Length: 248
Ligand code: PML
Image 1 (cartoon, helix red, strand yellow):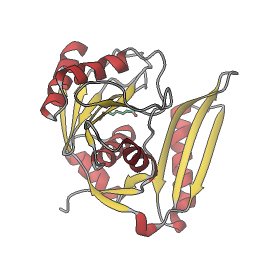
Image 2: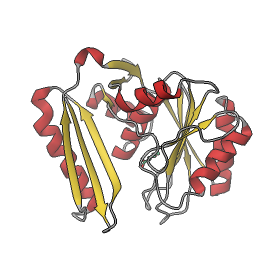
Image 3: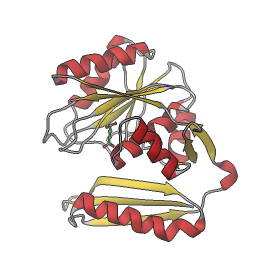
Image 4: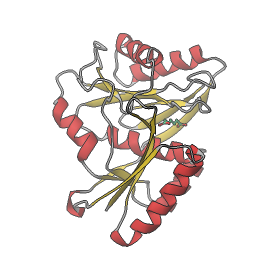
């Protein structure tokens, strides 16, 4: 089963997506997992959400794909500019052109409001190639295969929060897609300034990617020129995956 919780903020002119989380679990764990996700959401919103949507879907177990977790690396820099430049260098190492990498950084910096999903850019030209507007492409149907093994893998890699857990599950799913080349992301959480660049093998964290108190963040997926975009979006949004950590 898939349990998803989404919180929205209704400002009177339609609702704005604030946050969400999901788990893929056997039927008998659904009630526990919904309770855990609700507690997590109430910590996040401190009870201020206008709307909390809980959605439970049945997933065909035979369709779930087991995929490997990305290797985690972390670097700290003195300035945002230095972190951005190093993120660009990493993107280039992962096959993205410099012009596309810089357009990716600028695309997030220039957002006037955070997007619910991510933008897809051609990895060579840096042109936006999806037509999903402000919604962007939103990855879902993903979880780690074994929560305690995953958390111990994260601890050994020197990271630990729920935010990082979810980002690594997401980046690992994205990296498994045909046509994907790399990802750039930083959070819209005003208290969180670490971001990352991911490739098909590595999740490389960079800090600081933005000023504290800045509540704008976003995701860019760099896509191989000529990739099957609809197939890629379908995989991102609908294919169930469980992320595995290396065996001890
Ligand atoms: C988000 O808030 O969705 C993005 C999380 C980025 C996590 C970066 C990290 O610390 O690894």
